[in-house]
Amino acid sequence: MASHRSESDEFPGSRGWRRTPTDAETLAWVRDRELVRDLPQRYAHGIDTNDWQKVASVFHSDCQVEGTLRTAAIRPYLEALEPGVKAYEATLHFMGNQYVDLALAGDPDRARVETYAVAYHLEAEDSPHADLVMGVRYCDTLVRVPELADWRILHRRVIKQWHRGPLPRPS
Image (cartoon, rainbow, N blue to C red; front, side, top):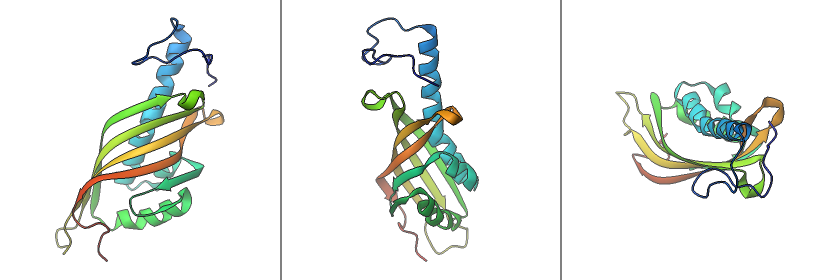
């Protein structure tokens, strides 16, 4: 979806608009904001339901990830992440506060979303290992993908705020 804003326009939010936006501009802004906000939620749902196709669907094919344990291009990153997640009996990602910045650096086809999360990694009842609980921030830079009429994560940086339990998981 093409942007209907000019470079001199500002976005709704703390700064406001320099002029009253049209209904079409407002609708496009709300739609983009919701599509951007949805990506981290979809990622978490895919991880917690073991749907790795859904997990992969939120990332651009050129995505780079700076994770808590490794940095890699998206395909090798997910190939390493999947068995690590599957080693736990269950995971639950509680996604909290989000900060969305549309039109990153004035480019209407780039955005940023920062999502706070608490990720629970539960061991089996008879496991000798403690559960892992982590507070993280997912800092995502996104790019609009016009042929999908959607957005994808082009770069992800995971910032570990805190954790309880073993990280990395013992073998």
